[in-house]
Image (cartoon, rainbow, N blue to C red):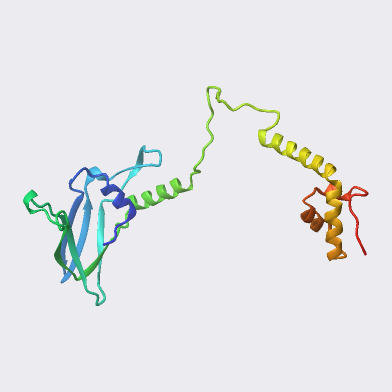
Length: 216
């Protein structure tokens, strides 16, 4: 059977094997009518903050009965079987399945169309539209270990690497020229991006006069 989400949430509030409500089955002009009444102590609802809400959960819930559509559905119960110490075997501690019956009708639990139910839906819509993050004014100053710095470590490392790359480009000028000449022996034209990829040198060093050339 299917039940509304709020109803299953209220059932979870029941302690242990406590009673959650009463199920009534009656006949009306030859038709079977089924309804569920939620226990009064489980009707209280809390908002997102955990505080009691101004509305309570509907208590009356009629069932919509439908056929299973030619399907064969069965109900099983599963229970653990504990064997005696002298009876221990490979199958000891296995779960036991028991056939309880055959399903002849589907039952869908629906809330009764009441003013209380409409108030609950309105509350749910209001709660869902509230922002997840809220601004809050603090009375005391926040003291943390995070302090502003002139420059972050990763910026310092990046600048250091840039300087080292620049020095390496100037020191290996002849090697760069050899790579360029070798490249132009294969193809006549290159764009600057291709030359950067080939020489692994920054663009500025390649644009510097005398540091690059081409062969016709």
